[in-house]
Amino acid sequence: MVIKTGIIPPIAFEIGGIPIYWYAILIVLGMAIALILCKIYDGRFGIKFEDIIDLAIFVLPISIICARIYYVIFSWDYYSSNLQDIIKIKDGGLAIYGGLIGGVITIITYCRIKKKNALNITDYIVPTVALAQSIGRWGNYINIEAYGYETSFPLKMEITKTGVTKYVHPTFLYESICTLIIFIILSIFSKKRKFTGEITYMYIICYSLIRFFIEGLRTDSLMLFNVRISQILSLVLFIVFTGILIYKLNKTKQMSKNVESSR
Image (tube, rainbow, N blue to C red):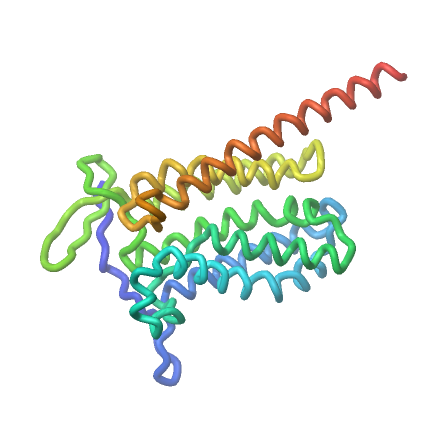
């Protein structure tokens, strides 16, 4: 199966001469669907939808800003000579890890002010985050970015650059499918959460695992000293949070045994 590119133009339409890009539409669509699901989850883990709306007012813009800052920092060789391009995100250039870091910092700050449990909130929203990621990745397809090395695999993406056509790994599609699967898995486990933070830890473990391998196929990875930043970060997150999850599961299991034995 060959995935054709260039079929959908990056600009969806114009309003008063201002171009509206599919990239932005898909990001907003992902956020909107995430909020709809949060409304459906109202009351789960003791979290009200009103809390999510209050939080979203801060999380959404801060996450986008942080996603851009992260991308610019690790692409500084280019942006140091093109400062005017730093604010130009219409053609892409958002790093998901930067957005997640910004979101986590905002959530922790919000919860300290409101005296709420941050892990209950993240358990509540991470399934929807995975779904929003799955939707947003299609913006990369339209922009013809976030693709991988050339391949002869049956599933491949056709791109033409400077008059040369080649077939590459559709890494945007790999991640879109994987994050959709993560959404399904987390949605199932959310209904039978064993302890606070379990869904959050599962999201971090699952996403860091798939991102580690997909990042190794990409040609546009953010680098630091010839090292793929996202791969290193993914590996660290996977090891740390797998350890935390195993510890918490064992602790929960032991507590259940103690309760049973005391009856």
